[in-house]
Image (cartoon, rainbow over all chains, first blue to last red; front, side, top):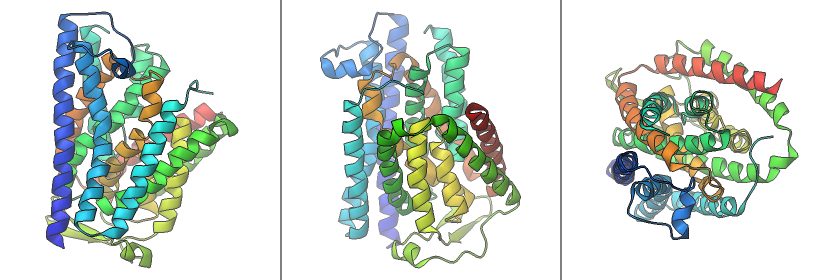
Length: 118
Length: 276
């Protein structure tokens, strides 16, 4: 039991480390490039989805941020897989709910356009 | 934003990440005022950058906290249902509630909690806690190795239902007010579930990333994340969080509690002023 628990925490910490380290690398290179070669750019990383990806500082920066945003979602996904491998079905169920609510929230949020503040 | 401002943003964010990783907060209370008041960045993009700050603090600090087995993954998974559902509900009731009243109400609630935290400031570990049947069924009681006390600390867990319900409400409110995500989580785990302080802050830290990610779709499609602002914030926060994790292991629960009390006092007074 203890070994399995160690395993879960160890693997999840690696998932986070890979996400965070890759993202930090992209952000650092992106920021350096952008300061060395200033360029006009959109104020919105969503444009990356709309076919505006080029290999420049701005795009690397945006990609790094997207990867950072994806890291917690990957963490939940990996938790689900690991609980399933441990045959801990209570937690497979609980993690599955979190994942579903997370996906619904992201999609609904993406469709929502409203102004901020009161 | 020119290079000087980028570097300044980096260092301020580093401090936010440091404090956030110690106290289980996202760092928005430092990042947002800095960006809006010092750099005169509009509030929308400042909130977008604070979303990035929350996720960076959470993921960056959790690398070390998971490795040292101080984060309670089961408590986090269980409570994340409450916080994500709460955030989702919050998106729908947004227009129904007057935010001024909310600020005042929750400002007072946090002030009350701050007093409670202060009263328990001498308590290194919770005493006389007996695990509830639900906590045992979910296998929430656990242990961690405390590097200050030089021993394995076993702890019990209670108040699971109250903790869950509080975090559901907190999810709604922090979605509405755009702040306090971490504060409520730490408070619920400390007050109702009676966890050791470091377990509460590190488990809160672990959870806030997921709660923040739930609103990522909204922030992205509405163009609230400006990479030129959020980039230096993310890098600074990641570095700060790495330093913070080193410090947490060597810090007493009572010290973390005292720091948390000060921040809580600060936030509650700001909220009350905003609500008046």
